[in-house]
Length: 561
Image (cartoon, rainbow, N blue to C red; front, side, top):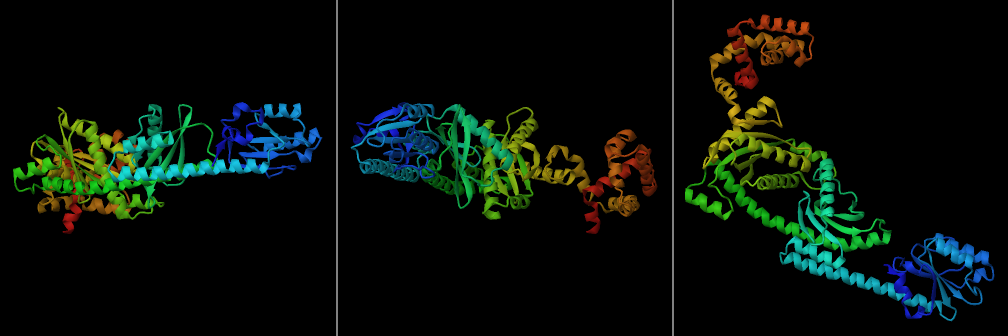
């Protein structure tokens, strides 16, 4: 624990001492210990140590004394106090010049002062400073627990901590959302930390490695300290303490701040856990209600209105349904080898964060929303108030996607948007969004976005899959082609699909398939020979296209059935 040289110099026992050099440094030089040293210095002097000496080893030898003082300075001592007496009758000018040059505190002591009394008083002062420090820590710990247990806001908690340690204080959750801050927080600190957090999420996601609990952040020619709040190896959030100078912490200062802020992080972790427990009950009620709306399972309109009001929902607004299916959840979890929580615990947090972000993005767009997660799908009813509804929904999804990418970079989502929107059409809208998602995933794969209104052709094909005669026709058309493709490892079905999408333009198709024109012509002739269909005949082209669509939409499964 450190005291300043100014405090040392103010002791009664040193009132008659004379500060020969470095008087302007008394307030900025700190003392961790005090010792009595004579020559040689070697490694006996530590950093931030007040050194007392009689100069007995340098008696009447200015060069020896000069070397001794230089070695004490080089040891990064706080100050050197020399007893003026029989061994050093006065401090030579060369040593005064050296101390001034090195910006070092040099003190003349009266020979009659006992070193033991100086040691006793300085050490007592250091111990008193330690006692005050630990009392301060205990006071902060008790008061913080009172704040947390009485349900005070994190703004008040941040303000209390800020007053106690005389620093700017920010408190944020693990997603980088600021939950509380003291009134003295500078906008530059807040903006720089948000950018710092944004970069951290972009690089590592929400579940980055704990590593060093301390991280430094520069702002306005000063530094802030970010400390991770965690429990059981799981990150809960962050405390940011600003107002430090550019000098890094010494080992002792590091331990002091760590001890002090550990109590703060523990109290805030308790707040987050209490908050989480309270939210869980509300989330369960909301989940059940939105899921029942999706299935049209609520018995009466009166019951719907009553439950919606109690949960803070406004259902007499026009809503559209969005359904999202997370992909690669287990792969994403297993890729984070540093996690100590189970997959079920991680998945539960992931779902809750997805729901919260879906609501927060809607709020940022001044829209109401109702969200639940059921049957491995995120279901969102979003208020719409724009003439171009789909454009508004796609803007919302774009923002939500970007946010999810930061929090969970290993997880992707496949999206479906309903066609039906408006008042009290929740079940129909959900069914459409769900179907759009499934059709889009089958057609375009994971991480795609599909609108129900754009799936008309796919829905027609799905209904045609129940027609046995059509299945037989498609099998007879494609049978030889599929066998040839399998034997030769050439996907002729894909070749035809790209050719048809390019409206029979050979040059465009060759570029799309990265094929030589002659190779493409060979494939097209082979397709005609194997299917007995001419690509120049409109009816043959229709039959080939229909057969291909049936196959790509699951005809093989239907045939097996």
